[in-house]
Image 1 (cartoon, rainbow over the protein chains, first blue to last red):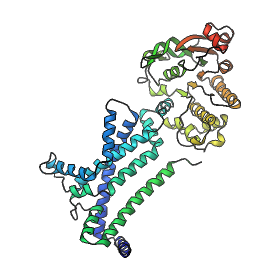
Image 2 (image 1 turned 30 degrees about the horizontal axis):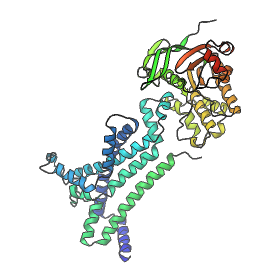
Image 3 (image 1 turned 90 degrees about the vertical axis):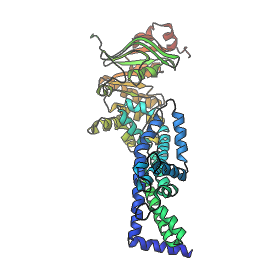
Image 4 (image 1 turned 120 degrees about the vertical axis):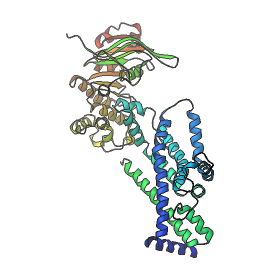
Length: 233
Length: 244
């Protein structure tokens, strides 16, 4: 209990004094996760909409792959990215290994299936009658898709939350491909691992609290957004 | 009498879903300003016919013409497409307020000056006091009125109605029939009304088309359809003897 309180106080102290080392780790965490989430959304939502609205040969295979992707073990993804970007790997000449770019790549692979998969389910749950009726009211194809996204907004926001949750707290993959290098690839999760191993429990707890704080804030924001978008009686 | 101008015409239509042929129809003209009732037992192909007229589906074979021009759902210009709208039997309402449902079509058109007509239509269909209610809290009859309202505010050239009074109580039926009549007689909206209720057809329509098993058995002026139907099946349907 004592250690928890000390950790909490230490966290407050670090936050209040804007500790430069902490700030660096926090900013990199947000940059890496933010970039990965942004790319996952840009790729995942259109993919989800497409799969939710169309039937075609091979769709089932794609959906099965997507579902598999939703449960991929992060370390396995890390290993794959590691091999891809290592010097002997097919993309070795990019020199991305142990850089934030490699971390972002790994996180995209982890969050894209979640964003696309949940978006697909959300879109598919809107009535099959909807597109035709919207078209009859004069909607263009783009307007139909935008309306359906709005109709499925709760599911789509849940997709984004799931994607964010999978990467902000991810450690295995970013540790493997980023290497937890100080001032370069150290993020909140890898720093927690390091400080715990070093026995700096109060610092580890401080970092942990900040991480949980971020996750909570992001989810709170999305939940508020969901509430604001819903009609009230 | 002036020669009626066909506004929508179907020619040599064969429409099928998989192997099942649901429509076989050589010719049907919907004339400008008329109210044409499409009657027939359930499963006769009435709703399918409306989807073809609204260019929501392309016929497997045959042509759908707007003012004598052949178009398909893909070649129909957006401006023309937006002159035709359908009020569906089971309306899909957006998960938002009544008001936003009714103004949806106007917003799609970038029209933000429709305030006056929206208010008028909301009053006409008796939804003015429910304007802020979430659509999912409405009864079946109220939903159907929202669906009619969102079509009416667009002031369409052609209004296609698929059983618009199917879920309503008698008072509401009369209200909606009056609204439909008004749109046709006063605003000169061309209306195709699908109904299984032949008395409604008799009350509202100038012409009646009788569809049976995907085939158009007759299209005649309303009086004639009821007084001296040409086809024995029409006569049986009017007498209530045609079960399908």
